[in-house]
Image (cartoon, rainbow, N blue to C red):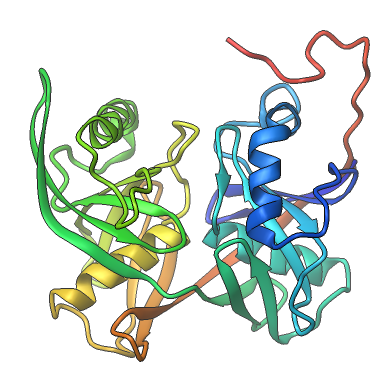
Length: 310
């Protein structure tokens, strides 16, 4: 299996260029569903240790259905197939440029969530114009047994988020374990309390927000991903969902740019425009760096060929 590994703000992406399963020729949403339901072992074998690493997201290249798209892509982590991935799209663009498949300029990428536009400014810098994003519920409260009361917004940015602002725990690296444990419990409670998307979609990510100590940075976040790892980057789809909340509350104007930092201090530049239907169209600018180009080998006699499962 031919892959290229990159990181976007510290968050790793593994682009699968060849060797993935046959998903047919349906829509990308249909192919993503086939991947999720029939090829979970494949997904885990690519991303679980010893072959993969915590927090890594894979980007499986597939044929697009839209003729003007450079490629189609289905993103997945070790636990779930994703509708869209912001850091993964930045990493994908930089990887395609590394391979010589795209040049500096504008391109389109088809994802299960829809077509996204990318602008490659240089070999490492990418602006993603994401799918339309929206807040679907504000100030939804719930009780996590033994922990306390929480209030947050539900928003969509290509994946589904429950966003708490301000964070009940200080967003500093030494608190990552505490933040992870808390957000896992919060996500579990959103499922129990039927807090989710407007069509019953489950919350797959939790965001804790706070103000940054750096006056030049708008805010800092901690993002829990479906595989229970934290996002090393500021999370592109999460930042899109966050922009939708800021827009809905009148706290950020269309075209106004802010800087969002992650729990490890990596940064995205964010802005949005209004869509005709009242949703927003987010833009996320970040940098990615290629780390490796390699061939993954799956030896059938290897007891951990499908990953370490504990």
